[in-house]
Amino acid sequence: MKTTLFVRWTLQAASVSRVLTLLADLAAKTRSEPGNLLYDVYQSESEPREIVLHEEYVDAEALAAHRQSPHYAALVVNGILPHLEKREVVVARKLL
Image (cartoon, rainbow, N blue to C red; front, side, top):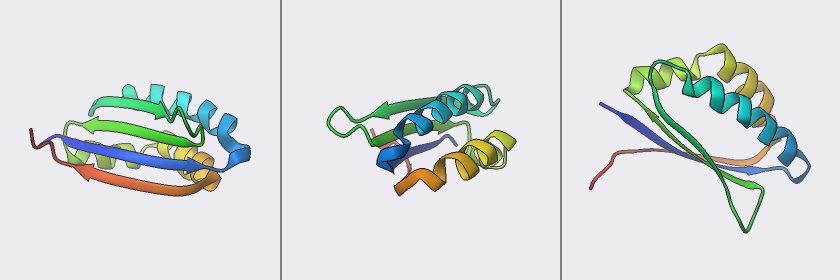
């Protein structure tokens, strides 16, 4: 069954440019994963430090593979997470 995530990050003020650069690389690599269906990145118009990711994977195993990939470790765990003030991850099921 398809797995959908909505992820909201609040970036540290001094890290916005750095994280956006890493996100461009992360998005390209994630979109090339066999189990990825969608990887969209949004930035708040009123608060540039707020980033929202909309991710879809063919199933939970594809999401697990994404989280275990070398690019996730390098770009997210080691590159982006240290520059966040806040992180919220919602795994959602489409209702309508």
